[in-house]
Length: 181
Image 1 (tube, rainbow, N blue to C red):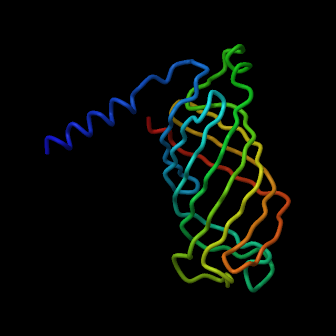
Image 2: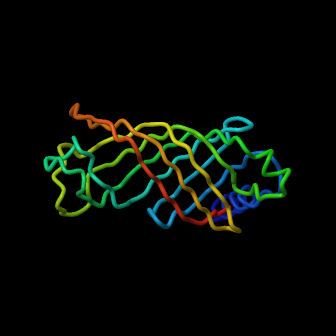
Image 3: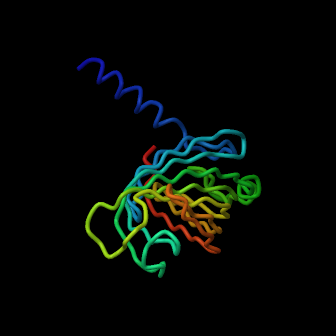
């Protein structure tokens, strides 16, 4: 019990470290609501972060990865979303007195989204239980108090483990959640 209390105290201490108006990027733990998941974002340089988001969401099939070839069927499945974000306008935001909390800013980056076996029966007939989408993104993320908003857009090359693949010109992501620390 004592070890648990010490661990909880250390976790709370690290999590409560300052969210002050500084240009420095921060480690952020989020609970995403729109596409339910837990996300952890951490700085890897003065202007870049990496983020890992794991959860369960409604996924759409890709044109060459299901048997219907319509690209309009959906399923519920676990996912893992990895992102590299290069934030480029934080100095301008700081000079204008805008919020920098929780890594708020505009970014460009790269995203790898993995979708896994669906959780229940559905109308999509996927050719494989695992697929991936990889591509460049441009986006914004903002903090409004503890609320988190992320929107990004980019194109993706998608593929599965059986060799099926294709290209999709516009992929959108919208995420709403809570910054925990």
